[in-house]
Image 1 (cartoon, rainbow, N blue to C red):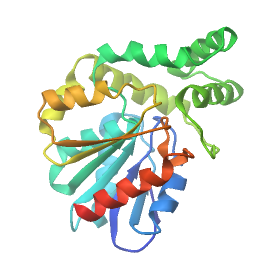
Image 2 (image 1 turned 180 degrees about the vertical axis):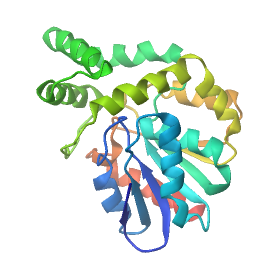
Image 3 (image 1 turned 180 degrees about the horizontal axis):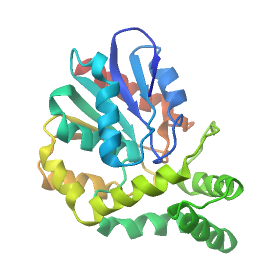
Image 4 (image 1 turned 90 degrees about the vertical axis):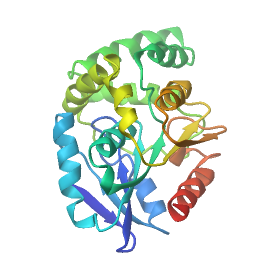
Length: 256
């Protein structure tokens, strides 16, 4: 499913994170559409292959020229998987807050998050993560988890959009995604990427940027890194980084 923003020359596709967090890029779509034609893609399927097929079908009427895919968090991985299969449809990739491509970097994420919580909150955080991984988290616990995630992932955000979260989609898609990462299949797929890659990453993001750039380097992927100061996992919501975030994207789209 897609939502269209801005003028009718649609050249940019936004892929949200989660998995299971449609609407999380709505504010980014609105801001980018002031200068660009934006396709906000809302994921509805429950397997990675189905998500790739859904994206391909939803973009059928917009493939007159290659498109720029902007993926946030899990959406960055989805854009990589799509570009590996349909490189002729992709002009460039912009990966925002990309999670690490290899399993060996994962302990650094939890370590960084837990270091930002009190002892009381750490216990709740771990329990709620286990619940969401199992696809059984309650609405109330999800809201509480989201609050702690915001605390551990962000620097100083100006807004916190209300999200409808699909916990079943998260559990099913993330199980597949973790398997791809843990088996090194995800990092191997990077060798198929033959389009320019732009990385936008916050210096306060708990996802280690080394887990992104080192696998890209080892697979000889052409990329450019923009590390934003005073910025967490959601640069489009960060008080001190969002203007630079939008400038980087506009420059990347207009110069490619």
